[in-house]
Image (cartoon, rainbow, N blue to C red):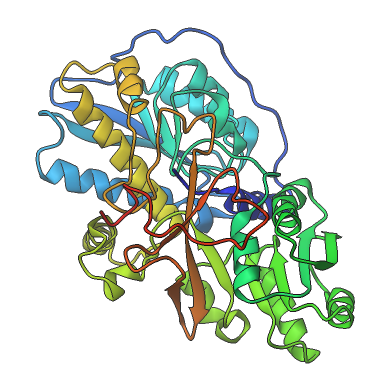
Length: 436
């Protein structure tokens, strides 16, 4: 019962590809883990992090450590777990290189002897196969298909992803706006095209006419006048984009300059406080889909989503200069899953016991932040219910939309509702969907 993260995978991987740094190959190992208690001491458990802290997109990945450390500091301030503090002792930088990522994963395990890797956010995650082969519990930002490489790898909102399954959310937004002619845009790179293929399949399944489709825009986008002219001629009234934020902003600006107004827009990326401050006019009315409750619920619904309230409060306490972000939140929820696993195991801690315990969790929400993740199946399937939170840009902030009176999440049947009737949000929301 969780969200599809294909759009986020697309947005991140496309950004990385545009930076032209993904070169090299990964090495893997099939050696069995030497000791399931590596890194476990009487008063502490030693863990590490693997992050793209340098390279083309450090601002995108680095906050995962901030979020994880904020959660760990909060737990350690209360005495840790079963008499052990969590020592996030090593944070290694893969420099946005697959070969270095694989090497640094080995360093964490073979040289620094960490028990687990609790914060991963990388351009490639080439070290995933090695960590999976070693049975090292690993947690982090789910923007790489490699999270499906083994049962000890835990993406922040599930580890499974599919690019081509019909995207019901895009079709739902189209139906809400009675769209008569949709357009779908993507870059001429595989990741962007794959993500938008799910959008195309969803629109077609639910009989939303696609009047214009360009999945081969040169990346990065520098001139979209030709696309906008053709969309205007086709009387497009909704645009779905799998480009990066810069491409989407250029699209919005070009549409406005050519008099193409009143068009519904759904972007794969851009839910960011800094982005809306910088591109306020270009982002007005744009829709976004999130796998977690929006940050805005803390002000709009104080106390309803305690996990999000605690995240923002703790982040402000330990890292007052850091704004809430999706990546920082991924670090927080990853650390929360690790800690919940530790508590389930108790003092007799080993890697295999931790993995077994987490893989029996039926409904992990990080205390109302996520739609329930069923870790019994989350490595290999998307589950029976698909939940997202929709937000829309309004002024210099974002506003949650759709959902129900009970929850900001909009939940749909999966693999997909019948195509013979309009798509509707499940109401009431399924049991376990926050708040409960």
